Length: 428
Image (cartoon, rainbow, N blue to C red; front, side, top):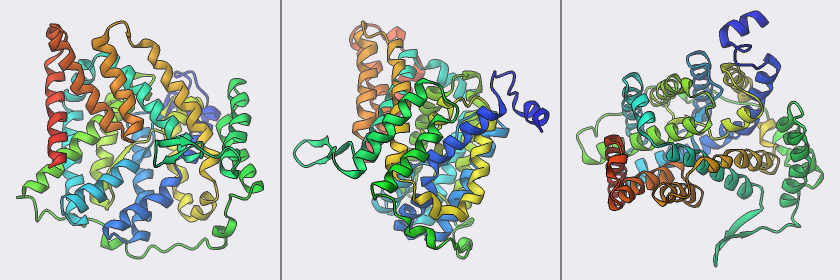
């Protein structure tokens, strides 16, 4: 078995081990397992049957991770994206007036557009045309986004009518669980204890149960029905293909998924040579999501937890993908893991990613300001895509007004134009 896995994933060549990769995959899974319970709840708002969408969520997670593992030998994890499912429901269906079946057709076509950029030289050309300061700011911005997500879900940062956000109640059991788990996890991480993130999540769940924030009532019912899946399988509808709204939806979604995933992958992949195949795996997963009846899949920002745990090869994503299958029948078990047990992992990973700030030339304002804008917008608008868009629009503008337009590639001008168009269309 060891020889087979080494031959398949080149584990020794990547200076890793099977144990490390499997633990990394388990860590990634623990941080993204929430999507099984949450995705169906969001998509059902558009009229899709809850249990059927929960089933397809698991199928898409499994398929996406297998594509990433076996095609790209990449540790990145593919799941239906939280921002993407909201875009599917609230933009495609509610705002643009499409039915969920027509929205699935949009997902399918956007996936085709995505794929075309990956099978041609488009993806590699795009990645080479993007300045290093933009790539590093994507990494740092995603780090801030992940950290903000952790602080929010852990109760350390809460909403405020007067100031938008404020410090949470440090005496509440939710916030205490986050802080105590963080207090346990940081020393484990600093000492490089194997499985540190996983140990932290388990410890956080135990702490949460002692403080009374874990709901054990969900453990009573492990039943699950597969009925209704035929309603969403190959249910896409192209009847609105001749309308402006349909193509506005295709354009907007294509822009979001291409650059959101490019930013995430370039930001998290230590080995950039894996980018093209990882990007292709991502594109195929989006197409399959449209066919199978799901919102777009994405490179999970939480993939960074598995990478931080030592994941270097496809065995990490392979492990994560395999765990999704039995997890479908264990949804109640994963429901008891509180957000406060996972939040400290996200906070630490965010810190690791923000360290790419040191690679940004802050002495050059034309490089620093677009990077700063990107990093600020990502967490504050709660959208990786919005942050990337602002950064890419600002970069060529600053270079042109300072007489440095030759430093900007034609590709950057084109990307900036389309992101500007994306905002214009989105405001109509």
